[in-house]
Length: 174
Image 1 (cartoon, rainbow, N blue to C red):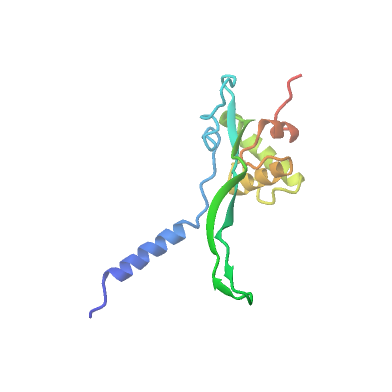
Image 2 (image 1 turned 90 degrees about the horizontal axis):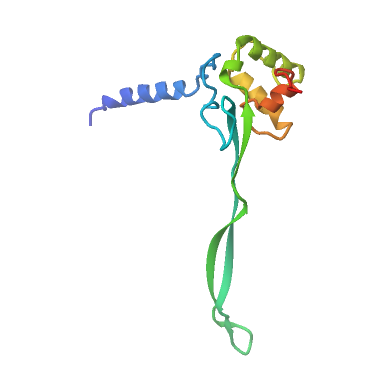
């Protein structure tokens, strides 16, 4: 049987796809939407504000129960003459339901290169950012934002307005 000519093409295509999956995403530049933060808003949110959500997945446990339909039958010596009949049933139980928590974020227009560079320096001062200061929301910046906010109970790489205030990036209205 002659070798297939499609095999090298398939391998080359597969290799190209695998390598492209390893490349870093383009950084978010000022003025670009950051994960759609400006698009989603909770009901009743003031106009002109930007929001995002933290999704906490449900915790589901699979429980298997066994019910004896008929017990085993034993002879006078205690030997099993008929084995027990057991029915197994499996159920899923929700230990914690899924939740969605809204939090206000900076709007894309507020994320100028100077503001992002200040954010990167503030995160670096707290030990969360170790990359080069670029002034763009790139992958290392998003990772640092998530690390910082995790210490405050928010698992998101989208900087909350509250945490931006704690970092000194946004003034607090008195």
